[in-house]
Image 1 (tube, helix red, strand yellow):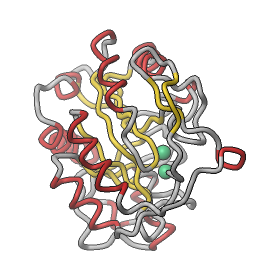
Image 2 (tube, helix red, strand yellow):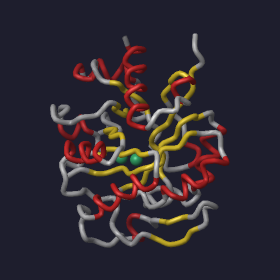
Image 3 (cartoon, helix red, strand yellow):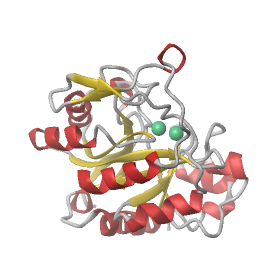
Image 4 (cartoon, helix red, strand yellow):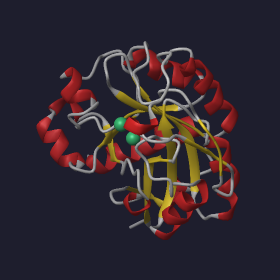
Length: 249
Ligand SMILES: [Zn+2]
Ligand SMILES: [Zn+2]
């Protein structure tokens, strides 16, 4: 049997108000490497402003890195937008910025939102309220992610808070995604039993780590060959979906 390796596409940096300040670009990548994660997705709520620092830190670690945003749709559903390059992630960031509410973060209530450099030093704080819904529907966000060359992954779709299925009760037919993320609380087989409409969808688990020790706490396994395949992120996501669906057979 081919060697299988872990991927975890949902990890936050200290730019997310609820994440630990220790979630610096190098600390995240070091922990991912130690845990044997071969592909890590690094996101923040409503922004990708730490993406450049994460990508600059990446060559020092034996882990493939995707960067992007976790966006809350107008319906209150979370979805990841993952990219391989900082410019694509930042183009999506600029677009999302136009759709966030014009409200300041409240550090005392929500926590700090640290901008960091490649070394993990704090270089500023984002003053906006980032953990807020945008005025775009979930289907629209997925399509905009694809239009920017990224992969849209509905996040923790089983979770009561901001998960697609408990929030909407169904998968909207116009929501185009190859990969669908489950919270750490349910395995793909269990989710398919609970929601039969997931039987034809490629499901993966993500850690949604906000603290270093949670990185890779749950992870999905794919073939080592696929993890390292020199594919652009869109094709790579499609191939991962194909493999996961094959494995679910
Ligand atoms: Zn979320
Ligand atoms: Zn998250």
